[in-house]
Length: 421
Image (cartoon, rainbow, N blue to C red; front, top):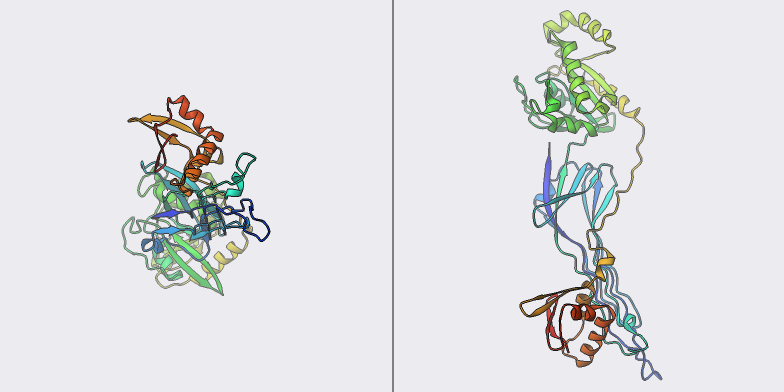
């Protein structure tokens, strides 16, 4: 079963830096004391126990983190925005989809508790105290915070269960899943009744585990025959296997070996998983008559089968007890944290400046310049004077000169337009 959902996420904006000056008694000309803005909240996707489907995302598809608050006087920084934590089932694959449709896998949250930061919050802007220097003791400049763009994320979960029920088509896997758990798979006497893995929840002796019925495997499945490798890959994540055989089959040993061969050809590591062999249909006359011969045939290849009837439920309890023993013998796996990943532009690019001429205007690309110009009052002559001084310091004026700009030309920075004076 492949369950997918597309969501839109947006990390919080960085808070704007404060423009403030000390106002204290006996300090008539206090210096700048505007604090930095707080960072915006991150978008974090986290694998959580107890979730098995992505149905919740059909109704809630937009997620936003909180914005950082602005800096204020007395050099007080704004508070950082609260992170937005999105809980998903363990085994969810996270993929970023760009506007052009290109895809980039960001992470695979296999273990419960693992998490990934898919988008970092905007960095808070600097307050005017950071613009103070010997040549400008009354800075009227500050920065706006970063504004992350909304991005599209695809969530995809592959079946993640404790135990996989496998076998040839029509051996009784669906019937066994139904009597073992609360699942209600379709049951019929023809191949590929189950077209996708089905999950079932099992509770026994106050212990719980998840069963996944894997569609019937036939010869060539590793190359896509039948239902193909789309379903073999689900077995990579289960802890152990219940291999169901049809007791009425005249080729029961060959059936077993064929399924195992398809597993080996797809991924040899599948053969290392603990396995319980179950012979179904013991309620039929054929199995009752030939049970001893079946047991001997299996022993010749080193197997001891558990005989059951998915129809009468005989032997089911013993199989579930064996499964619990098998799970209890598995080594414990520590929960680990997923790697953090930022899709914001690296800090080095924030200080980069580029200029190009277009239709008589000069288009500036400078994240730092955009952050400043969004924050200040361009109607104030004093602000404009300081602004061009700061542009000279960060190399923007030199870039304009190299591009052929002259005094009086129109300069566009972000959404703002001004004249180089």
